Amino acid sequence: PIKIDECALDGQFIRLANTSKDKDIDVSNWLLVRKVEDHEDINYYIPSNVRIYRGQTIKILTRLSQANRAAHDLVNMEIDSWGLGMNITTRLFNDDEEERASHIQRTGYPSSR
Image (cartoon, rainbow, N blue to C red; front, top):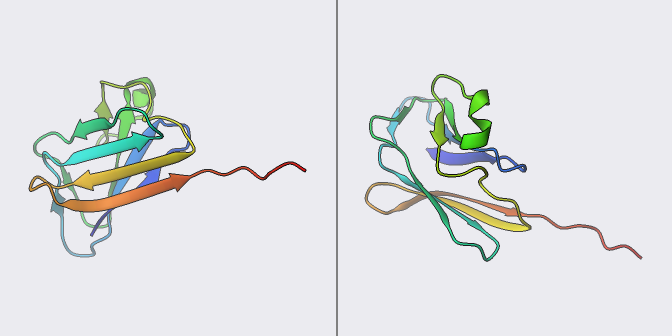
Protein backbone atom coordinates (compact mmCIF):
# COMPACT_ATOMS: atom_id res chain seq x y z
CA PRO A 1 0.00 0.00 0.00
CA ILE A 2 3.00 2.36 -0.29
CA LYS A 3 3.25 4.61 -3.31
CA ILE A 4 5.37 7.49 -4.49
CA ASP A 5 2.60 10.04 -4.40
CA GLU A 6 4.37 13.08 -5.78
CA CYS A 7 7.77 14.19 -7.01
CA ALA A 8 7.92 17.98 -7.01
CA LEU A 9 8.65 19.35 -10.47
CA ASP A 10 11.11 21.83 -8.93
CA GLY A 11 13.07 19.01 -7.24
CA GLN A 12 12.31 20.14 -3.66
CA PHE A 13 10.67 16.97 -2.33
CA ILE A 14 9.39 13.46 -2.90
CA ARG A 15 6.19 12.47 -1.11
CA LEU A 16 5.41 8.89 -0.07
CA ALA A 17 1.87 7.79 0.78
CA ASN A 18 0.44 4.85 2.68
CA THR A 19 -2.84 4.11 0.91
CA SER A 20 -3.87 1.38 3.36
CA LYS A 21 -7.02 1.98 5.39
CA ASP A 22 -5.94 -0.26 8.26
CA LYS A 23 -2.18 -0.89 8.22
CA ASP A 24 0.78 1.27 9.25
CA ILE A 25 3.97 0.62 7.25
CA ASP A 26 7.48 0.61 8.72
CA VAL A 27 9.75 2.04 6.01
CA SER A 28 12.91 2.01 8.13
CA ASN A 29 16.05 1.49 6.04
CA TRP A 30 14.14 1.45 2.75
CA LEU A 31 16.04 2.84 -0.24
CA LEU A 32 14.77 5.61 -2.51
CA VAL A 33 16.59 5.76 -5.87
CA ARG A 34 16.15 8.72 -8.21
CA LYS A 35 17.46 8.60 -11.78
CA VAL A 36 17.46 11.90 -13.68
CA GLU A 37 18.37 11.63 -17.36
CA ASP A 38 21.88 10.15 -17.63
CA HIS A 39 23.12 11.59 -14.32
CA GLU A 40 24.37 9.48 -11.45
CA ASP A 41 21.62 8.00 -9.27
CA ILE A 42 20.59 9.82 -6.11
CA ASN A 43 20.24 7.26 -3.31
CA TYR A 44 18.57 7.96 0.02
CA TYR A 45 18.13 5.47 2.85
CA ILE A 46 15.15 6.21 5.05
CA PRO A 47 16.33 6.34 8.68
CA SER A 48 15.42 3.76 11.32
CA ASN A 49 12.14 4.02 13.21
CA VAL A 50 10.15 5.67 10.41
CA ARG A 51 6.53 4.60 9.97
CA ILE A 52 3.97 5.92 7.57
CA TYR A 53 0.62 5.62 9.28
CA ARG A 54 -2.42 4.39 7.37
CA GLY A 55 -3.83 7.06 5.09
CA GLN A 56 -0.88 9.39 5.77
CA THR A 57 2.01 10.82 3.74
CA ILE A 58 5.56 11.96 4.43
CA LYS A 59 7.79 14.19 2.38
CA ILE A 60 11.50 13.74 1.92
CA LEU A 61 12.80 17.25 1.44
CA THR A 62 16.20 18.49 0.28
CA ARG A 63 18.69 20.50 2.30
CA LEU A 64 17.53 23.72 0.60
CA SER A 65 13.81 23.07 1.12
CA GLN A 66 13.92 21.94 4.75
CA ALA A 67 12.39 25.22 5.95
CA ASN A 68 9.08 23.79 4.65
CA ARG A 69 9.41 20.68 6.83
CA ALA A 70 6.43 19.40 8.81
CA ALA A 71 7.02 17.49 12.05
CA HIS A 72 6.89 14.03 10.44
CA ASP A 73 8.83 14.90 7.25
CA LEU A 74 12.40 13.82 6.51
CA VAL A 75 15.33 15.77 5.02
CA ASN A 76 18.02 14.45 2.69
CA MET A 77 20.90 16.63 3.87
CA GLU A 78 23.17 15.34 1.10
CA ILE A 79 21.45 17.14 -1.77
CA ASP A 80 20.15 20.58 -2.73
CA SER A 81 17.70 19.16 -5.28
CA TRP A 82 16.21 15.80 -6.23
CA GLY A 83 17.05 16.84 -9.80
CA LEU A 84 15.30 18.24 -12.83
CA GLY A 85 15.00 16.73 -16.27
CA MET A 86 12.80 15.47 -19.07
CA ASN A 87 13.00 11.78 -18.06
CA ILE A 88 13.06 10.91 -14.37
CA THR A 89 12.47 7.60 -12.65
CA THR A 90 12.06 7.28 -8.88
CA ARG A 91 11.96 3.85 -7.25
CA LEU A 92 11.42 2.70 -3.67
CA PHE A 93 12.91 -0.57 -2.37
CA ASN A 94 12.18 -2.23 0.96
CA ASP A 95 14.91 -3.54 3.25
CA ASP A 96 14.78 -6.91 1.41
CA GLU A 97 15.68 -5.04 -1.83
CA GLU A 98 12.22 -5.63 -3.33
CA GLU A 99 10.81 -2.78 -5.39
CA ARG A 100 7.68 -1.51 -3.64
CA ALA A 101 6.85 1.60 -5.70
CA SER A 102 7.95 3.54 -8.76
CA HIS A 103 7.18 6.90 -10.29
CA ILE A 104 8.05 7.95 -13.85
CA GLN A 105 8.08 11.57 -14.99
CA ARG A 106 8.35 12.41 -18.66
CA THR A 107 8.20 16.02 -19.70
CA GLY A 108 7.49 16.91 -23.30
CA TYR A 109 7.13 20.23 -24.98
CA PRO A 110 4.92 20.92 -27.98
CA SER A 111 6.85 21.37 -31.19
CA SER A 112 6.82 24.84 -32.62
CA ARG A 113 5.83 25.06 -36.27
